[in-house]
Every structure is written in structure tokens, then in C-alpha cells.
Length: 162
Image 1: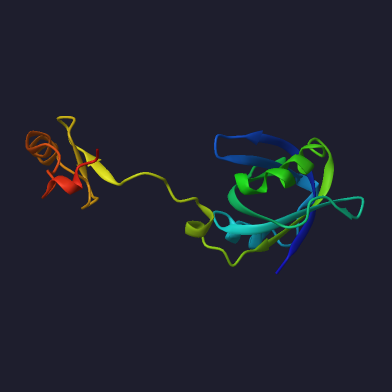
Image 2: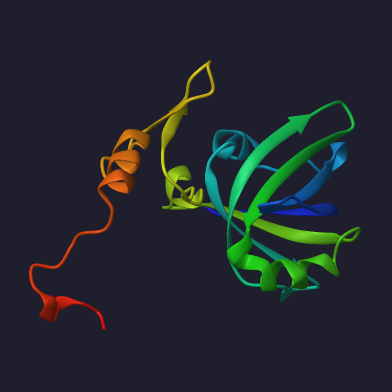
């Protein structure tokens, strides 16, 4: 189910992790599939844009962030991730113009769309200490004991580094 509509490409803003695209549908230009669009809000969708019948950037996986309707217009917000930077650069030229926006549901889940966080998992306690969920993480007590013992001594003189 692909929904095509004539919209105003209102703006494009860069966030620290994604680009936010805003589109407006004026009140008189209501879309036939607007109910389906409300159902897709909050999901991952595949969007594409055409200007004058020419495809602008191909298909892009995007998060359909929100769809807000008032008496004069309907505003749709989409978020695209950093892996689509070259496609986003192509879109920027068309901000402020009327475009044909195609929206279709994606097979991708929101978990697949969101990038995994780097680092180790843990919990910060109220006293400022940290409990780390990594079983390979050395404790302060283990580090102090290892420092007292010093480096391991070789079994015979042939194992010395010199």
C-alpha cells in the first residue's frame, strides 16, 4: 500500500543523529489515504520524493515521527538516519517546494532502525558508584591485588626478557 500525495516540503533540520523532514498538506489537498498514514505514524516507512515526475533520491527508510492535523493543514515529520547522508543532501535542494511524496510501510522494525549504543551497560547508584553488567570487567579490589602481587615472575632464567 503506497500512498502518493502532493505536499509542501516545509523544512529539513539536522539533529545530532538524524535529519528531520517536515511536510505539509494544506486543508484543501486532503489525501485519500490519510487514515492509512495515521496508522503508519510511529512506524518505519519507505519514503521517496518526485519533483516534476523525476525521482529525487530513490527510496529511503525513515521513521514516521508524527502526523499533526489542525483546521488549516496536516504536518508530517519523518526522521532519516546518518547512513542516508548522501540522499539527504539531494533532498535539501527541494526544501520549500511542492513535491510528490510517496509513503509505503517498511518491513524494518523500529529496533532495527535505531542504531545500537556503544560502550558497556551498567547502572549508576545514588552514591555515584557504577555497577557494570560486564562479567569480564575487573573490580577495584582485583586491580589493587594485582598491583601488590606485581607482574608474574618467570620460572627460569631463560624466560627473562634480556
